[in-house]
Length: 419
Image (cartoon, rainbow, N blue to C red; front, side, top):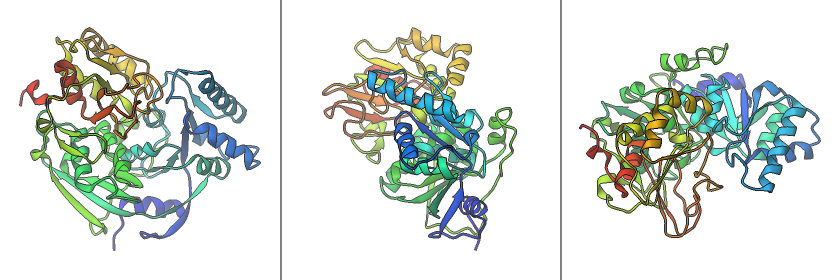
């Protein structure tokens, strides 16, 4: 029986032939923690009596969740991280550098065929580069920082085959929301979700990152896409290492296969308060919106800003609506500035902030009040996720977010783009 990409990666790393269900110990190629998880990992590291990390060049710390700090307590956690990084020779990406899941590939920590872990559930994003990447707890991360290893159970794989050309007005975010509706919030628990098909091959690396980012919302251990020349081009100049460009065998075994016709898709929305409460936007149009958020590790990349600018250029955010735009990294911010995107968005009435997570984790910048409705390009719409438990979050694509900002209500973006 053939092997999937994930099985090949974990087999290489563990030095043995593996099958789903096997328990393995794997060397870790890179690991990461941010200001929401690193302080706990640092304390656990010290409680273990550890004196030094196994390899500082393979560890990254990122201040992104509450950046800049909104309180003295948060500032003290940031101080703890900075001091630990200095003491151990670890690279720390400080306030303004961006979101951990954008920085890790940008800075060359992510390579095809590698095993990467992070103390954040959306570490699964790096599967877009053909890597096995998954989120772990802070104590597990402390153990990785000490030993450079971690145990895993080899997951079964679900294949999502997406073929056909996506219609105008439909983006990768709509694809993954549609798939979430099919699989459900717990339908892929501790499984690999492998995306393939000509629609996936046609996506940019950024689009694939959006797909893999949200597999954890269906309970998956990791998401993955076969790496190709687009990945090689993204990584060119970012790292001297090559990685391994693996593919699943034709006779690899999958626990389930989902086939999606991209041509039949339309703009989608995940309605409150579950990521799998997915419907076409046209079915729920007209809901009044108070806040629109364009950003996050799901949709804060350059192409997401480009898509939003297509609608917002020459138009205005409706009075009474606040639209927050937060690029995913300094690199994205600078490129958007050079392209004139930030000017377009600012002239439309958007508020633009420095790179970081922003409203997504509900820590600061755009915390919602009672009864408020937010249309967001982020990845979670749980009760109280962005503030008040009486607020509501609708998850959408950048196009739908921009269209909704202009009209002041949840809006199908195809009204603003040529279909």
